Image 1 (cartoon, rainbow, N blue to C red):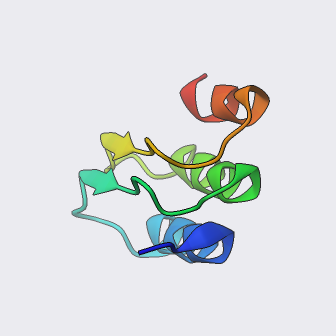
Image 2: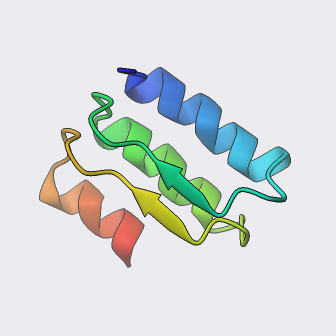
Image 3: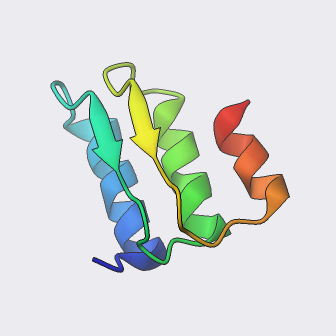
Length: 70
C-alpha cells in the first residue's frame, strides 16, 4: 500500500486512541522509514491489545529498529 511515514503516523494514532480489538498488524513493504517506525513504537508503549506487528520489507536503520524491539 506504500503508506509511508504519514500513514504509519495515522495508524499509530489509531492504535493509541481507538484500538480495542486488533491483535495482529502487517505493515510489510509499505515504504515506512525510521520516523514512521518510531511513531508505531510510541503507540505500542500504551496499546496493550496489539500482540504482533510485522514490519519486514521497510526501510529502517538499525538504531530505529532497536526502538521497537526493546
